[in-house]
Image (cartoon, rainbow, N blue to C red; front, side):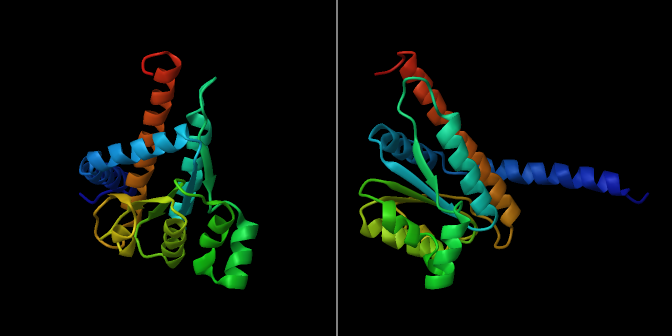
Length: 204
């Protein structure tokens, strides 16, 4: 008996859930722990965390900036200083028009980034020229660079100071983006819990 469109959609949904779950389970938890520590330390020393991505990863960067800035806030505790380089459309397009799209993020970083700040670049391919330029600029200024990557990791895999890499077949953007969003939510929850424990006196 032929599948109905509804039953086919249900089957695809189940297959997708298994695939995403499998790749999330394979993520490097030690790397996630290191990234948590870098973000926690940046928060405590009032450093700024810059986040950037293109396309679907730009949406992830914007979403995560909101979560880090708002969802981790706890009364009386140090808030996260976080900025999404993908959000200011006027500035991005001015830089892209006048200096080239590869300068869309590095041009913004020039105005703000300082030693010991953090730049997180989110990319499925790991090859986006504007993210490569941003990492180069951040490293020149003494900032710490982190990549959330997919596919084979691209050139960014060996450029950033640390990374969480979701190894996937090239072209499976949806799978990488699903895993990256789960990673962002996980780190947000860890940082929020950490601040709650500080507030409640569970740690010094």
